[in-house]
Image 1 (cartoon, rainbow, N blue to C red):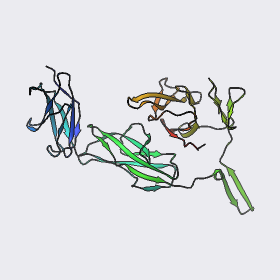
Image 2: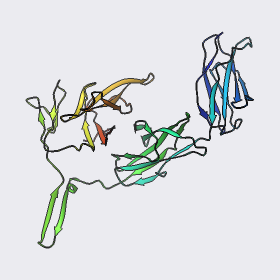
Image 3: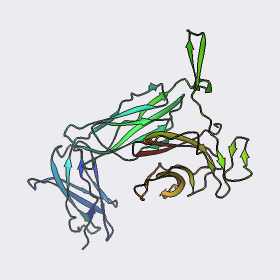
Amino acid sequence: MPIPQIVSFQALDAIKDFEVKFSWQGDQVYGSVLEVYNNASNELVYTNEVTTFLLKNSISANILANGETYYCKLKVKFKDNTYSGYSSPVVFETHKTPILSVNINQNQLIQNANYDVNVNYTSEDNELLNTWVLKLFNNSGVLISNTDIIYATQTMNYTLTGLESGTEYKIQIVGHTVNGFDIESDVVTFQVQYTQPSTFFTVELENQPETGQIRIRSNLISIEGKCNIDPVIYIDGEKVNLTEVDSKVYFDSGFIIPKDSYEIVFLASNFTMYEPIIVLKDEKNSVSIKYMQAIFDNEVGYQAYFLLEAYSGIKNIPYRIVTSPFKLLQDKQKCYIIIKRIKNLYQIDYQIADPWEE
């Protein structure tokens, strides 16, 4: 006779209800019996019998004690009130749910386009945090971006960049402990408001009273691009049309990208699927960005994402990271692509431009 298989879990909080799921291949299930035992003494401490077609049972809150180790097993019930054999036991620990938080207060005003987020983690019974992810939402709760999975260290932080003035955001940290706890911080809402500099602020003026002069220094440089198609086709007299096969614009002189740390922001539209849209390279290294699509959720269908591939002259195996998935871009819909490198680590993000934004 087949036996059920409990979906494995490693830890739970004894002061909260916990759902135990299982799989089953056999006759129609009409219910199940869940038994929990103390792992040290093998004493039966909890039994729960439910009548349902659903492949799940539960452990009620405040029955077990935190800081202990238990194991559970389960059998399914049939229409004629007979039972299957027991599943294999699953051993788990009980811990009080750890707490994740950030250094942003509810409705805090941030007066900068960038902000260093410090992530705080506390656990009363020394449950260790394994990984965490930062999620950024707009004021409607729609996910804008999230970080890659970041492994926990003593100091955990992440710099938000490109925050727009006059905009409200929401932020949340999602974590996973070494014993399998999935935890979330509270969703924190904050506003961004700062003075946006015009192009005039890119020129620095320094008074020199000794000579009665003003010293002017420009922080802008002019970079001339070269196109491999002739004649060049312009859009609105300012953008180059690169929709033709193998058409490219090169910016390869007049500036240097730092090797260790930099941030580059591109604004473009009408990407060609699966083809490189941005390439940064020197004699040994290269970084390319591709516009991709895939199905992440059958109910949603195809979604888009950006793929970053970084090749080193030392290794021929690429370093790959992707953005979170988003709705496929429409024709002429503009999108910012943000590439950031800190030492040997890359980050890639995106921001859908407003319809009126250039």
